[in-house]
Length: 124
Image (cartoon, rainbow, N blue to C red; front, side, top):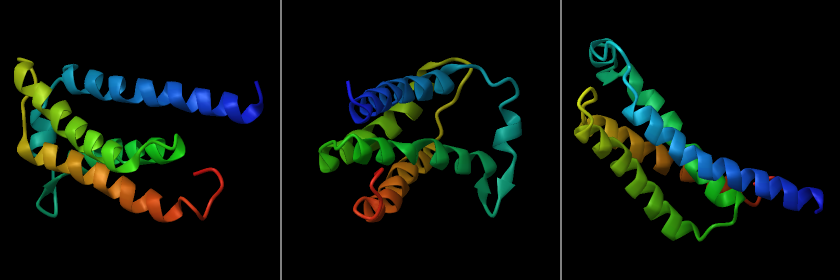
């Protein structure tokens, strides 16, 4: 295998592990979730920034792996919603519509960041 094929295979494996990691993070207990609920920055909870940051890489992986971008954008949005909805069914976690919105913003932000860079840099 040449280096480029190996690199793409590694990236594909990371892309497979990435959504699994998000679901694991969505269902593990966080201890005192009141800390996150009561921390506000300019009318947003501080963890909303984390939600956005967690979903930005979705676009990077899709662009880098040359996925069908419109359909993978939709899949990313769906995954952002589902990953929050899963928490509704976990007794020690809670569903939050603003977290779901932050997830969706993260997917959108990722595409807004990486799509313009796609033709500018070889590695994208």
